[in-house]
Image 1 (tube, rainbow, N blue to C red):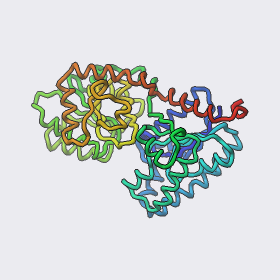
Image 2 (spheres, rainbow, N blue to C red):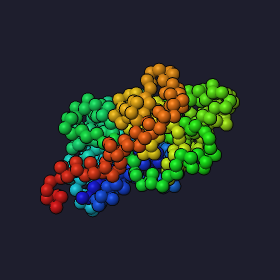
Image 3 (cartoon, rainbow, N blue to C red):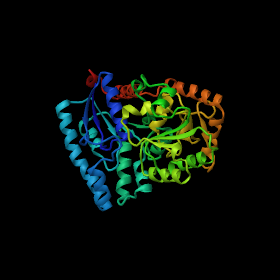
Image 4 (spheres, one colour):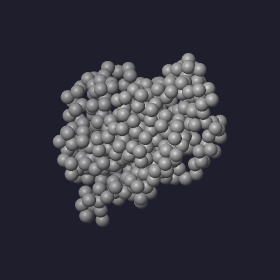
Length: 388
């Protein structure tokens, strides 16, 4: 099968991981994948925000930037059209973005079966956090893309409900959660070795990985550690960076627990699993209500005792008391209390970790399995002669 794969992502973050892994998994299944995308940004480090595009967004008037996004679709349409003529693909796979109708235009012109991967309701997300100047146009672009794809692939059931609210028939919605690449976890040290490599021997490591934001609530974890007796072994290890790091480091210094809080900063993707291996308790604190957080699947793959919020998108994967300890995100003391339960009960930690390790296999949460689901959907959409 020849798959034309289109996305508009430059930033090297979780989006980049998803794109790279899905393309790789499709190719491993023997499919030819033709990628149409912005310049890869190979000179940028993992965790970068997209370089020039991010700077333009910060400095241009909002309405002008949004018009530029829409105008970009004309360029994309031409590039996609050239790719169709050169490679004659069987189908189109697009990663949804706002102000991006080009994929639908190509589908309609060339009769290509189209799958649309949806990772967030970008109109609602940007309207809430960044603001949108051209709201009517933005909402139209989202509705146009969602309604005109042959099938849409939201990453959670919660997001599927949002998609359905735009008038997309349920029969055209297939939820495909994020996953892991099992090969990245084949040669990972055990917890003791991983701790030793980081100088955290004899510590009870509470770990978080990802882009650190204020609303994650890690300040509550620092406060909790500061209340421990001097002999406490609890240590917070944060793998990653982000806008909240400086404030957390200052908080730890002010509370005289800086020696019990560590930040790695941005590290290479190939090093993440070796660091997460050092966790005794993996933290999935606050998360947007429709997301499928990549860190969660890494925690599961490494068999970690997980603390997370009891909200529908997380409960699609985790079950409180079986493979995680979930807390009420509306309670200020919810996260510290859940962490406390696991810290004080070694048997509970072991049981949660053992059950967590089974979830990936039970639910088939791998990129390979996701690629197989995508292939099956395309096989039902592609006319018999096009598949021959």
